[in-house]
Image (cartoon, rainbow, N blue to C red):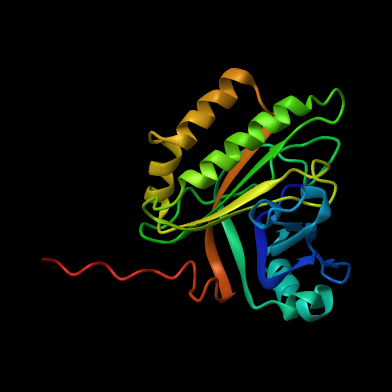
Length: 247
């Protein structure tokens, strides 16, 4: 299974509930995966409906040129995104990746990225993507529900987390056929590290997952932003903030 070297992400936010559109990439070389997912949790809709206010188009690519071309061709590949009240897109370079997901091979989930630089530059904003998946054979929906309850608890606890800029969780069509994901934006790597490994709801859910084996696979990836365009809730979510003036 060939791993990717970069990712692309296109976020779209609508003022009214709508069903997810499609994304085509047949004319874009180097695309290893591309699909649309909906933040149905935030919309209060059924995950299988793909009806939401907010959507993501996630792409995995062999190289930066492929990611840039997919984003630049949005008008033909995903024209429905032009109707959004706000969009933001980026080419993302992973610098830390662990675990497995089924995006590149549904039958044999594995790592998504290779050839990563060792770390992000100090002070740079970080985009984090986490995934979770379950094997379809012998699927125990109680495990799925228990894990989902934990995700909701973590999302509700994230208000006011230092360094967090925004957060979303998404389901692809088929709900569990393609591993659900979360996307979060952080001031810097220190912020996400403190949240992920410090005390609180997230730490509790990590410990619970490990103790009770609530999922068959998980992954996390931290990205630096190579190129971005647009705004998210009126601002650039990866803009470097000015340091506070000394007192």
